Image 1 (cartoon, rainbow, N blue to C red):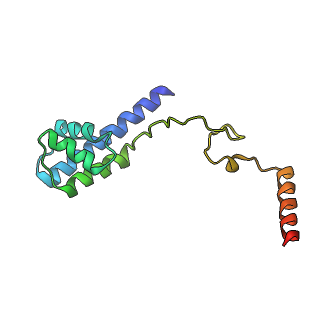
Image 2: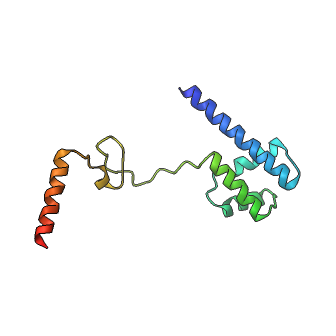
Image 3: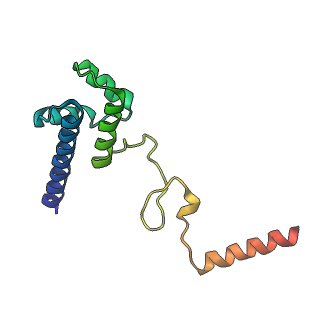
Length: 128
């Protein structure tokens, strides 16, 4: 199974490099694969266009803002950023084993729960 995942990740990466290469060819007239890989690696962990633009400028790549935005959008669409783990990861587990920060949504629905909710609704309507 791990070999399949690695193959899929490699295929996604190659697809991204190919797309960046074609965008470079369209916008600046240079469709170099090595340049596309370099730009892809620079933008891979960037969360914002400004961050990506800063990294490109540090390496001497002056590109128009719209083009930087386009490249980052493509990169994030094909290889989305992995969310950083939260420091506050002591969350309650849901009844099906998933973790959630909304504990009320993790309550399992069953007949007893439905009866409890119906009783609560009846009591609230009687109070009014």
